[in-house]
Length: 92
Image 1: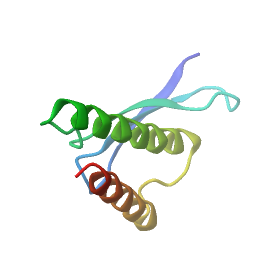
Image 2: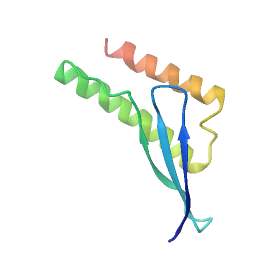
Image 3: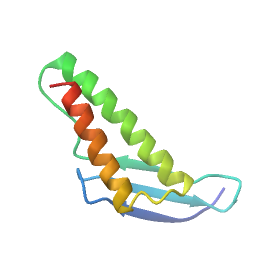
């Protein structure tokens, strides 16, 4: 299970950075990590709930990137921004 290389994707919103590792087998999906500036602080309970929603969104973005979806497209980035706005509106 040798990695073929690492690809870094930096999205133009929320400091999102995805690091993808491609595998040497077409049957194995890529794997990777995601980081962002989206974590909230403040009221403990609300912050925990907000961060759980952000974790879910980040997991979805990472899964899409691993599956080969173009997460850098303008439409996809706009979708991320809309989702983050909806999450923020829900918790404020």
